[in-house]
Amino acid sequence: MDKNFLELFGNILIGASKGKKQVDEMLRWVQKSVSASATGVYELPAMFKKFYGLDQLSERSSDYKLMAEKAVQDFQNSLKEYVTLLGMIPNEQTVSRDEYLNLIRKYEKLKIRCTDQEETIKHLRMIVEMDKEEKDSPDLITGIQDIVLGRTDLFQKVVKNFTGYLGINEPDNKK
Image (cartoon, rainbow, N blue to C red; front, top):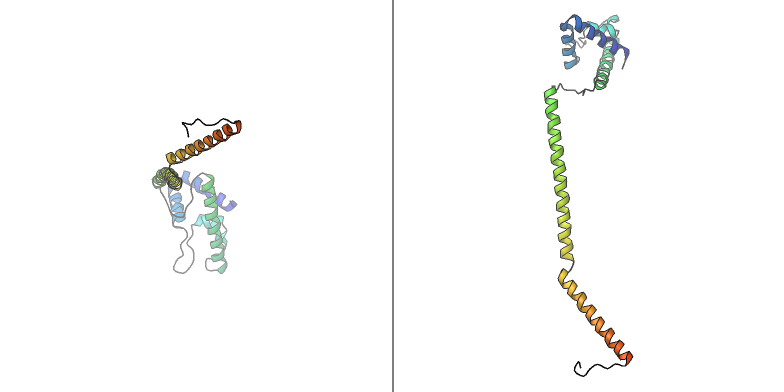
């Protein structure tokens, strides 16, 4: 923040204790920013001109216009920085506290809604994946039956080979 801004703002606060009119004039000026008159010369409050050294120059000079633009830019940058330091939100449009709080409430509701939707999407994706896996794989019962039949055939072959190796013949009724 530049020293001119701090000095100006300090005097505004001192002026607030002396009279509200000066503060209201400065706030109106800050809200509508700097307006150019029909001749192109900036209409700035006297206190602003004093603290930014513009009262030393003629309003008709080309240096005045350049210095006034720079002073206004410096003032606006410092004001934004100051407002940020105070924990407020600087913006280009005037927003009331109620409007700001309404926006925060809407944001919080949308955040909750978004979280719910993300959770729903996650569950739907899981369901789709499970359906896809079930369609791609054979039926569970059929798969188990195939395994059991395959193991039974293998077991019978092993027993037959083992009994043949030991020289045990199958009973005639089994043949």
